[in-house]
Image (spheres, helix red, strand yellow):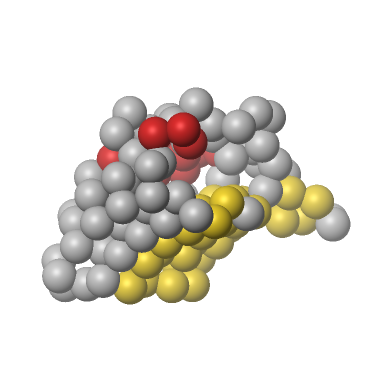
Amino acid sequence: MESLQTLSGVKIGKGGIELIKELGKLRQLRKLTLFYARAEHFSALSSSLNEMRHLEKLCIVSGWEDGSYYDVIDLHLVSPPPMLRILKLGGRLEKIPEWIPQLKNLVNLI
């Protein structure tokens, strides 16, 4: 499973920290789509994403309730995936993440 390249439609939901930690082991991953990310997930998710050196497409959608997103997407990437070309963030952002300018291959930011 560590050679998996695409993982789509993963619903994290409540308590998904262990799942997120396991994602960090998928170092060959090129495409990742996550749904229902919550505030308590972003620290572990940041750590896992820092390990994904081959990631080309990342889509993260935060939780949705009563017609609005209820958690701010707050990722702290010390070493963001250098091959990332497409980044889709569905949710609230308080500010543009500081690591965005480090993405030299980024062609699509949604």
